[in-house]
Image (tube, rainbow, N blue to C red; front, side, top):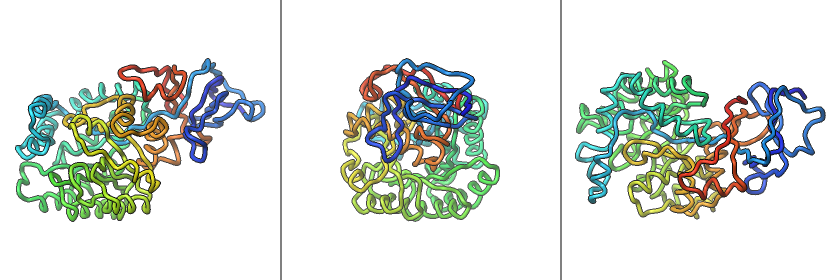
Length: 402
């Protein structure tokens, strides 16, 4: 078999389902042909006459699938350092939001920025993710809250995928907060989201999925259902910010629409977990926000595990509640704060994250036929990727075989 490139003398953590733990192969080979994995497995079982134009000796380094950050708000302008100071003095996130800060502060800055300025501001954040092995990233809108500004955000997100060798998926989060011009009129704003914004942005090819903030400082369950219903009718997959600050039965709503994921979930209950398990909806856990907001209510990991809900984790990179651009630190936070295992953290940033984006068929594991997206690490054991803080052992990042 003639391939474009082969990585040999490597230890693989394939993340493939059905294998024990991380799917470790001690003497492994990954072969790439036309951007996809042609073979990933033990050297002794490789196809006869496996050859390539370029053969790379990994010198016993570890290869994992490229990391997948499946929940970010990467495109925005400005910062919220002042709010960080307020919270250090005891002001709650909810109080800041109700006083006109929070998301709306970033909305003002983002509306004032041009598309080019948003791209320039967001590229360093994207580069930080890529430097730690990310090959796929989801980017949400939700800081425009008006058609022209949501469009601008989504166009900027698409542009990031052209500026860098990375897969970018865009999510329309128009139902993120109530913009000031709709103050006191949430139903009217939802009508704008579903009747004007979503159809226009979808027709322009700017939307891969649709999200909403179902929360006591966001939108009600009924308003959220209107958004998800419109997205489904438009043929778009959905996901949901659910049960972060309170139990709004968002997990059940997500499951009813067969959402790709329900995200945050600190307040999810047993009914919500059962519904997610039945619908195949993944849980996306966001320890950066939990840490940054100094939350104390841990997501019910034991119940989620017992129900067999896929557990993904992500940076939730955003200016107000998780200004985090390190997947490695995110894994450490998930382990230390949520008591996730090393295997759960690594699967959570690969296979489970792919599932949370609807990409399980094309990425997230080292298996033949999937995109050749790899992270190659200078480590002795996979636990180092979760254990270290502020240290990046990435040796090389491979996207689509290059």
